[in-house]
Image (cartoon, rainbow, N blue to C red):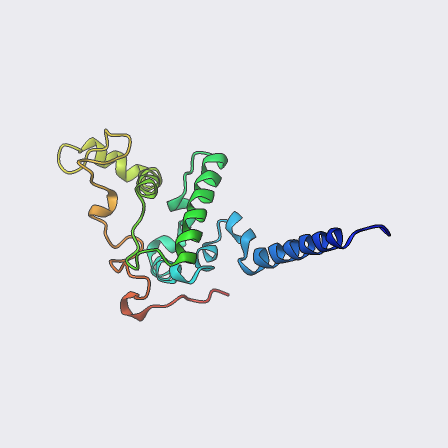
Length: 178
């Protein structure tokens, strides 16, 4: 250690600063919260407040979290792969401000939500499937008839009709749960 050059000392100092900065970012971004299924993780980023508030005031708030609707439920690996992919895409879009202020779900996300709707509401969807010739067709694995999704009819579930990130119906806000 006595014979360290100035360049080596600077390199060690820079490395320690980088580690400190990384720790600071992890704490500030509440990074570990994203490993949970707590819906509050979704509002770490302010642009999701409207989605959270509308979900929080819906019937789904008592029964399903963001993770249970928006991520795959067929295994831990698929769940965390989707979570990592979505998290990266969200981080880039929110950091660079390249997202559309009228939030829209991605095609991949829509497939996951559709599969989870059908899975969670299996007793209803199986009855609907038995009567598919009338209104619905769930023969397709995605549960889609001519591109139709569950929310084609059930538009207000669970986020309401408003899709803007700065508007919430009836001026509802995020409720503090104690």
